Image (cartoon, rainbow, N blue to C red; front, side, top):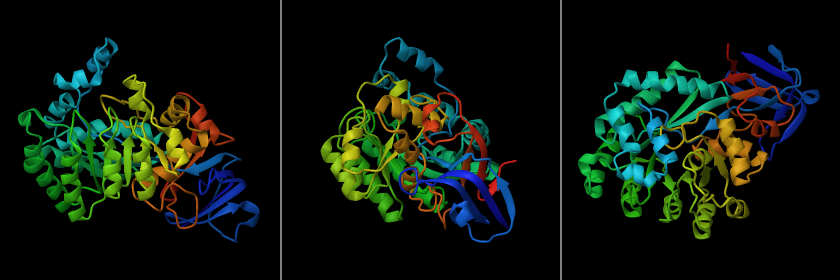
Length: 397
């Protein structure tokens, strides 16, 4: 089936915005076969969709989420507003561990049912691909159950899903003070089981004082390498343990958060091609003051992605356009960088070479907006001007 989108302004995101006024896109099946000025379009017949001059971008890619979980942490939000720090809440048994208790008690169907409304909110704002991490089970059975629920999202909704194993997210209470035992007895067996079942596209970890040391993360990364799985890392969010450099040494797809990243870490990421995933939602929610070094990342040519970090505690956000706005207003990214961060660079952070651009050979995942210029997508606060979402060459009903 051939579909022709025409009378559009294209932000191809092939280099900068890659703007094409009076543009058209020719789609065959789920692939783009041609994109450019409509006046130069090759002869083609098929269903034609007149977009009335609207802006068309690649479908947005949310490359860092934890959206499969049970329960909520609204009370924790109140405590933080009363002065408790993220670390104080975590050490008192709240934080991630409170979500772990709720998630362990939930069935796979329960987890899927809880996740789908969050997914729907993302799709309504132009998202066509979502990364989903485990990490709220912290035992073998629940980690696998979470990943199975995440895989099922793609069966229930028209969206691409990439799953990431995050067993090294926090230390469960039954392993208090025994980080290495937890890695040996739970994380590594769960990782092998997830790989055997085809549930993991990548492996992540949380390298931080309240989580796991670089040496412990290195053990997880070594196991991932043996299984042929790419790695990524929560790094330098609350302190500088040089996790980003560790991730870069392992050829990581991405290092995420990065508020305490130093120039040595930036250089290491630049040399390895590791994407910096910027997560302003957690910075905003936790009322942090240390910003990621956007200027250093820019200067060294490190690609910067932007994601929601959708999770119940530090970033209960499902709006990727809002994350783009925050990246601009809080971190001084440009609107062009923010859109590249939610398309081209976000796809790179997931190891996807056929998403995030409007170009021949790419998957036909697109978003049409009631907007004249792509800067509007980061400019608007709390309103998403989505006109139509096209997934795999087909427009949503």
